[in-house]
Image 1 (cartoon, rainbow, N blue to C red):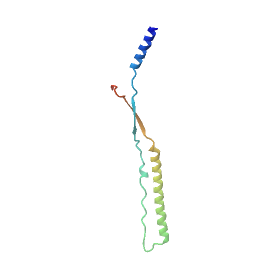
Image 2: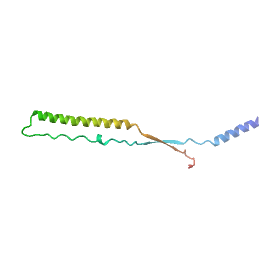
Image 3: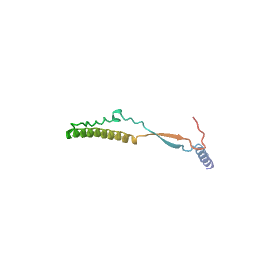
Image 4: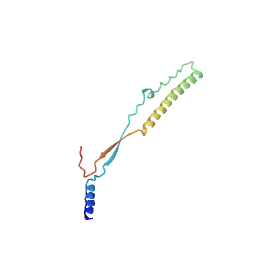
Length: 108
């Protein structure tokens, strides 16, 4: 009986002596590089108003339609850029770094 008790106490002492504290885990967020294509970063040039002595309402209407087309294309490109950025907003790489617990020698 004494021998088994001594055996259990020795085993317990050996097991608790080998226990290492849990390392501290640090999460580092690494930003993801997002590429927006060049064609989305430019808008067409705004048409110049062609005002002269012969300008009539039809010319003005054509100019307004041209402005609307340019603005519409720019809005479409901005929406596409917003979609690209929103898709990558939550896409970050998380790097897990294990730091040894305090009072533990660091080994390489």
